[in-house]
Amino acid sequence: MRCDSPIAEETKLMDLVNLLPPDLLMQALTHSSWVMQRTDSYERLEFLGDSVLGLAIADLLYERYPEAEEGKLARVKAFVVSRSSCVQVARKIGIDTLILEKSPTTLQKRKEAAENASILGNMLEGLIGASFLAHGFSRTALAVVDSFEEQIRFALKEHVDYKTTLQEVLATQGVQPSYRLVAEEGPPHARHFTSEVMFTGKSWGRGSGTTIKMSEQEAAKVALSALRAKQPASRSEPAHTPSEKRAGKGSVSGSS
Image (tube, rainbow, N blue to C red; front, side, top):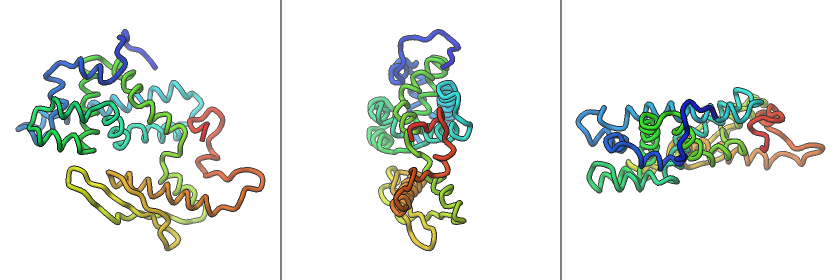
């Protein structure tokens, strides 16, 4: 990864967060409903952090995988910076605990925020934005990559964009999948969705998640598994999806 300033020893995102100026930390941990002016909340920092996160991951992928095509890089990046990935990282590094301990609001509101997947992801991006302002891009980017390394490895190993892969598989047969929401459960701050994917006149899979997009991805994953289970045994080589056929030596999906 490129360096635009000297790198300090801290490469853990929470280390950088703990070094933030108190006023910047409080802003990054403040929801817009808790203040009179929205500009006093994390929203502007979230806007900044979203771009910092995207650039840090894009830079890492560009440097680490010089033979990967643009389409593959884009798909991996999209998964790594997705809301579901941000929520996973936020919980892994303890953003929920940080909210409970330091967010400037009542205990009840802190508890609700710490359990809300959307707020967790937003505050993570807000803290990334705050880290960029306080520590610069190089230190923040190293810490971001360290925090998201598990998501990066998963994206490189698995078919993470199941909806796109399913659409590519079905396109060879002139078939188009469609998705519908079949269930929505839980309190407003912790919703859980179930979606179903349909094609050829029937349901091929259901999936659940904390967002509709996540539930559709899981449904597509189930459908892909069902399709592969129906394929005849390989005669000379394994069957590949269109995405797999395009992945050459040295590409991002090298181990898929």
